[in-house]
Image (cartoon, rainbow, N blue to C red; front, side, top):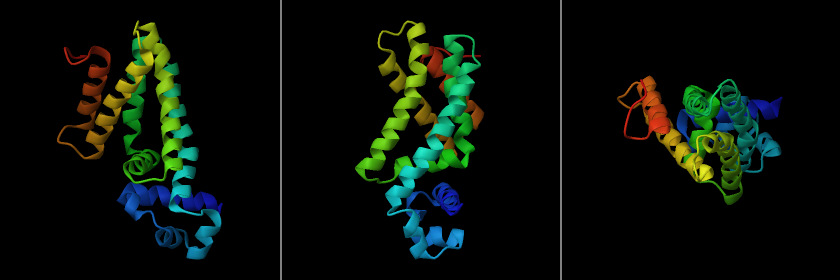
Length: 182
């Protein structure tokens, strides 16, 4: 239970103040534990980050996958892939992952994030293959770039409404920059 409370506190700290806010004194204060007790659960800040990724990213990815499974065409699967990721932007788990990704991490934590992201990208490769892309993995990585840019735009509180950002990202994913989805 205390490990779970520490992870919940870490999510809150990351979503509120980014990686700089994730400190062991702050974790101790949020959970009511002694600072030395935090070290019993995690040896470093990177270990907290790794555990958050191990716990939260699969849940997030499962939500994206579930949205894709309800779609009946390859094009709708891609749309669901984009829309679901952008719908999760307000979720604390997502804000924590974004904050983690923006921060300076040790190579082990970075590799775990890369591997988790690779699993997310793999979900859309089949749909892209069905649409006839010659290099579906490369296309999937570029598609994720569109999603990531839209996430950053929403997270920054851009002038555009989040729904407009989502619609623009879906349009770009499905039609490129030459046309729009109505």
